[in-house]
Every structure is written in C-alpha cells, then in structure tokens.
Figure 1: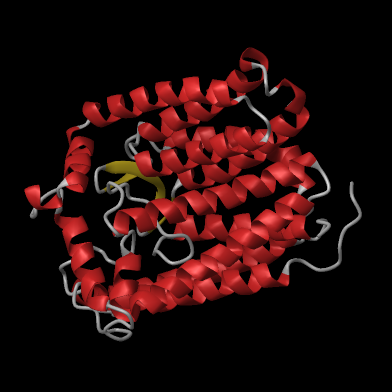
Figure 2: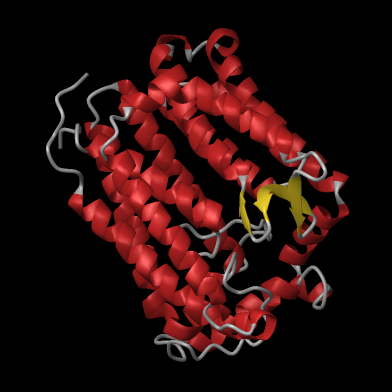
Length: 366
C-alpha cells in the first residue's frame, strides 16, 4: 500500500461544498411554491434535501478516511449486492413506482434508488478488473468483452425499470474507463455501431422515448405534451438574461415547469441568476473536474487512477447531459444535475464518490 499523504485535496472539498450550498439554496427557491401547494410547507423539499446533504457530507468525510484499496477488496461484493437490489426493485410490492418507472425501494416518502448506487459499485469493480488485466484489454475476447458483458447486464437490469438516463450515465462512465485503460479504437468503433443500433431499438420499442426524440427536434410540434418541459425550460432561460430576474423571482416555478427542483433546476437557476450565475456553477464543475483529473494522474497505482477516472467521468457525463437537456441541446432523459438537483439517492451517491476521490488525493503525487 502506498504511503499516505497527510491532507486531502482542500480545493476539491471547497468546490464540492460550494456546489452543495448553491444546490440547497436553489432547491428551496425552485420548490417553495410547489411545496406550499402540495404539502402546505414551503420548506418541505429544502428540509429533506438538507437532511440528505448532511448525511452525504458525513459519509463523504468518513469515506475520505477509508483507504481506497478497501473498495478494491469489496468491489465484487458491492456489485453483487447492487444486482440483488436491482432484482428486488422490480418485484411489485417491494419496488416503488414513480412517473412510470419502478426504480425505488423504501418506506413511504423515504427511499433509495439502487441504480444510482450501481454506478459507483460498477466503477469500483471495473477499476479493479482493468488494473488487474490491463495487458489483456487490447484483446477483444479476453479483455474487452468480459468487462462490457457485466456492464451491459447491469444496463439491461436498469432498463427493466425502465431508467434510460441512469443506465446511459453508467455505460458512458464505464466506456470512458475502458478507453483510458488502452482498449483499441477499432474495437470501440465496432461496438459504437452496435450501440447506436441498440439505442435506436430502445427508442423505437417505447413510444414515449420516440416522442422525446421528436420533441427534442421540434418541441412546438407537441407543446402541451412531449415538448412541454423543453419549451417551459427555454421560457425560463430566456428572461434570465445576463444577471437574471433575482433570487426567488422565477416565474416558471409557478406551476409552468413541472417539479422544477429536480431535473430542470438549472433552468430556474438561469432564470433567477442569469448567465453570470449559470457560468459560476459551470466554473465550479470545471474546477471539480480539474482537481479530479490531477488526482487521477497523480494516483500511485493503476487502481487509484482508474477509480478516479470513473468518478470524474460519471460527474462530467451527468453534468453535460443535464445541462444539454435543460438548454434544448439533447432529448429529455430524466438525469439530475449533481449536487444541485433534489434527490436523496443521487446526492448521497455523489458525495460518497467525492469522498473516495478525496481519499485517493491523500496518496496522490502532484
């Protein structure tokens, strides 16, 4: 085991807590009207988000002090446990259905989303696999296919819920890790063609996915249906201008943009804080990714590097997809914005992942 560096990456801690603070403020601002109408408590969502944030920060600092090689030891067990949860969530009476997707396990309003935790478990397992078999990764049969088979099995389980957004982030993260490990570009080109064909098949197999594609290309074709969220999101972004309408002054949160505290919270942020506020948040994400890349490059072993690459890729992919959806550059996928969107499982998972990254930074040489 490498010699531990005494201090974690201080800049990464500050950036993470800054994003979390912005998220807590925006969750309250975006959800206050809806929470008052539905629960007669304007702080309903904000209090729950604060609870999850508190638990997540405690978990982050705890995991920051757990040697990252522990995840290597338990990687297989974690993946198996997440597969069991993905099976349980599909059982009626065990899994909870929301918005047409059976993705949660829990009691009442408190629940967890197993697919979120599968992302981190798969990163830990794949980092172990790639570090053990890096010389074989150029072999399609012995290196690439065994790793991708497990990834796509998890993707298939997530799609049974169905949850295309989370599955896409997990697959994209794993492909980034495999590519960084030295897999051949020709293999990725072949698999890319298969992936495009499979994606087209998934879209065509479900009418609501096809509507999301058509609404992305022309949301005004169905302004009260599949194009409604994108149109309302753009209506929020437009008036924001350079400086925004002012914190708490959003108009779209008055029942125009459905549940604005979740996937479309960045639209409310742009409406209230404008281009300046949105640029500040993107700058924070850029700083987080920069520190993560430095940690990956400075990690003392392959496992630490692959683990850091996986975590940073997961955050980057999720941020790009969410902002792309909110600004109308990508079809609606139902992916949260890390640290900002309301959601217990997603927030807790991201803070745990940052905790792992912080522990790697204690060993990194940079």
